Length: 300
Image (cartoon, rainbow, N blue to C red; front, side, top):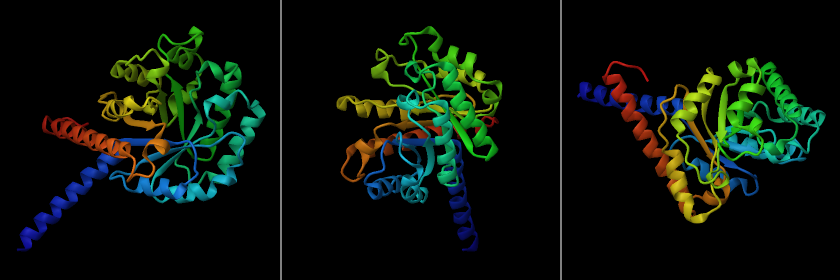
């Protein structure tokens, strides 16, 4: 009887260990672009089987202290990635204003935010002069490193849908990101919206292989995806959250942009279940690959 109990305990521990390893190796993200109705958002996130990572889009010209209550509530159920400023508004801020915003948000929320997104869609042509963009993100990066905060940078994938060739994602990153950031960023994400780029479905294996060369030490993945077209939402969620990429340090991400609109509250929005099922399918696929690698004598 004791042997049977011991065996059951070992199986349970192994099962929990596998779940923990998977959780630590993969990241499943969502985005909330507002914190109104925060209790419903918290409850919705809490009902996912796997702990999510939630990007909070901190609105332009809003004081950091207005987010303290919401961030404290979210902190109990999710990892938090704080977006310092959405790309759409970066050009509205002077370098001095961006630095002041960085200082303010780090001071008010730094101990609750797990990852600081120091720059969002930084190669987008709408962000203004490149020198200004670089000055802003360099300051946010250096200040975060000084405070031992984890950092993320989001690039905008724009193959054949840019106006200025210098803003092409890989060219911009190679030419403008400092050597220190190329080796020191904790995460590098790609933002991509098929509706904005001729409905192209990229070869993500090739894209992330190339990204890993530029940022060899960073965990990488999809930092934003989504669509406003209702009939396409389910297929997009399946396509991204079930994405299979074998590039070293690929962790997933995804960060569905319309999570608050599409999934809150969880028990009345069908797309919550679509995301949940897609994540479970991804975990099963990942575990199957991991077990095969172990069986073959390799490490994942």
